[in-house]
Amino acid sequence: MRLPLLALLIALSLPAVAQAEGPSKIKPNGLGSLRLGMTEEEVEREVGHKINQDKLGGSCGTARFASSRDYLMFTNDRLRRVTVVSKLYETETGIGVGDPQSDIRKAYGKNVKRSRHAYDPKGYYFSVDFGGRKRIRFETDGSEVTAIHAGRTPEVDYVEGCA
Image 1 (cartoon, rainbow, N blue to C red):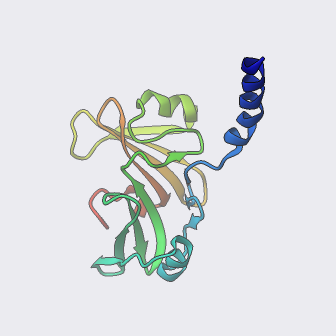
Image 2: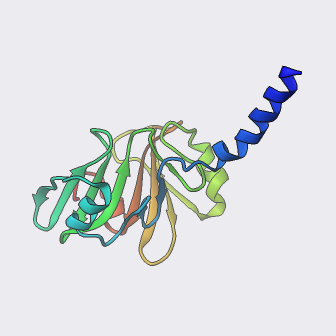
Image 3: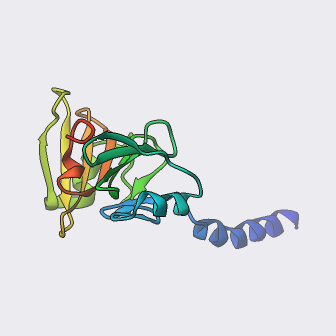
């Protein structure tokens, strides 16, 4: 009689686990509760700690978050782009770093535009426009996603820092 009771308890607990909130989602307008247009101070309030923006020249700067390689890009002291290279996040369609590049076309269909990678001869950029200058750009090594950039054009398309 213990086995059926245990099975019932497991079954009853599954919906609660399935409803548990997962990691933040990468969206065309930001990451989780971080939205394009936020100031550095607003981002700091949202994440609960100082982010220390590094100014890269002119009105552009970046700030690391989450892992040592994921970062936020600011222009004119406003959040304009999120770049994710860790496996901590995924898009609303379920695409994350490490996924096969073929999943991008499966998720976004004919809305995907492909172009050659600036430095990796085997790699590509896959871009999906969402209107209002918002875009998600997937970077690949020719087989899998190596980075995801979400934000506003032109910043979302910059290849080296703020250029």
